[in-house]
Image (cartoon, rainbow, N blue to C red; front, side):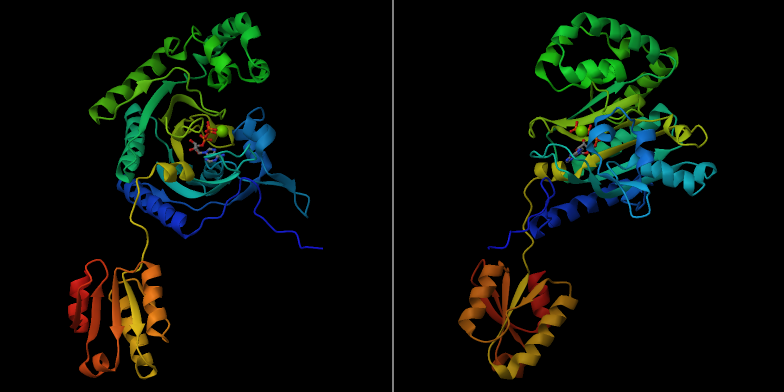
Length: 412
Ligand code: ATP
Ligand code: MG
């Protein structure tokens, strides 16, 4: 019987060299930009207690109710693969006793797990780059966080996104808005999907977020949170907008943005593109002033966001592939050791170098070609005796015998 082929799990993909090179670039840009706003990197666990997400993300959300990879381990503990980063960040912040250490600005990158229906840009293991700012209460701090996200996308060269913002109000103004919305939804109930019927009981605001077209059509005249804000939320929302204008960050108000997680209040935002179909949200986040307290800490205002690495990658402009600078071709056994040493020296000088393995000249040149090297350094006995190397520029065909130092200059 033929052995069954082992495949990766559906919706869980390998990161192969071409892709990882893009991820690394995205990570580098994130580190640069976020550090310039004094955010520091944290590395948090991938396994967390399941209860953490039940208590923060919310029991009725899609994530917690049906998408978590949760299980009981050999010791009987209920643990899960983290579906998102904010809850774990808050847990770590509390566990480290940092609530009195002043504002904390953190960022992280790493895999998240959700058992969703896999599609383009929607995976079961995906990577997020996220930022969390604990102790941020002012509207201008929201504006700066959004500007930081915008700069991150700009620096990556991702231009096809637009920023949409909304205010979700607070515990003062949301209850009466919720009532107004529910009254409206009751009237439209027949036009709404099954899931929205459930949402009406659990979290009616999430109906606004439904991706079903007929639901969206039924919501045309739905009451909007932005028209029901209390004075404090109103001031905060206009402060955010003034900040964004001052920073020249373009935005539109989209009263339908509610976010899929329960813990958000006031500012909610998404950077959206039309180029990825239904998976159009590239980076999203908002303010979550109640979360730290609800996980057992002191009342601590906070704001954060997360971007999907795989979606960023799809929008990234084409970049030069990662090809070696130099291929080293060694002609004859007599130069074998010398050629190995020269390859090492070229690497020490900062170049990326492949050694073509010696042997037949024809095979080595073919290999240099296939590797896509920009230059070939050929070393024969003549070169070894003269203390020089033969350099060929593969794009111009130009060839010259040069000293090691001259070669480094020529290539850089
Ligand atoms: P969506 O509306 O696309 O389901 P979401 O509201 O669930 O997104 P968040 O939980 O806020 O998204 O996560 C932030 C970002 O992480 C998203 O904007 C997206 O770029 C990315 N993301 C979320 N879920 C996935 C997934 N299953 N596969 C790939 N990327 C994802
Ligand atoms: Mg989702």
